[in-house]
Image (tube, rainbow, N blue to C red; front, side, top):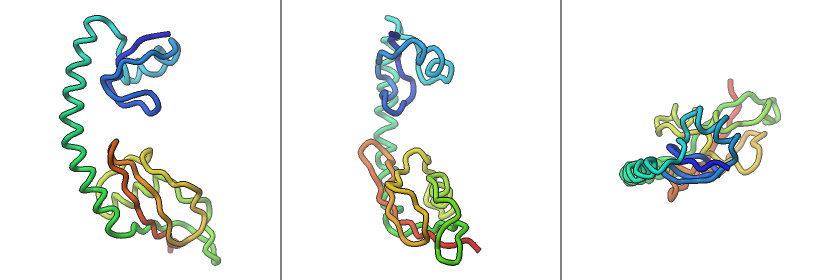
Length: 150
């Protein structure tokens, strides 16, 4: 087992500045090469404090931004155009990346597709509810209006 310090948030593992223990291969082959973590050392313990201080400052600013974005997303439905048959059945399904693109095209900001939770597959035209986790404490309820693409 390897003890590491996370430099970025890793889903299911922790946030930046957390000290976690993971299997050696996961640390050596995934986390360290991608810059998600650094090896834990006694000197690295001092780094943790600076990472946590920076994270706290960013979190305060991003919380306010996330609340504003959530209000915008909840205010009006987002239109997603997708290829569909005559009966309203979609060819394929609406994915999170298509929703993120539609939000950006609507001028409501940029949202990471990994934060969008669909619940179930969207395979027909109509109105749907999805959620987007914009911050640890902010979840936006988004109304989607799925229409057939011309």
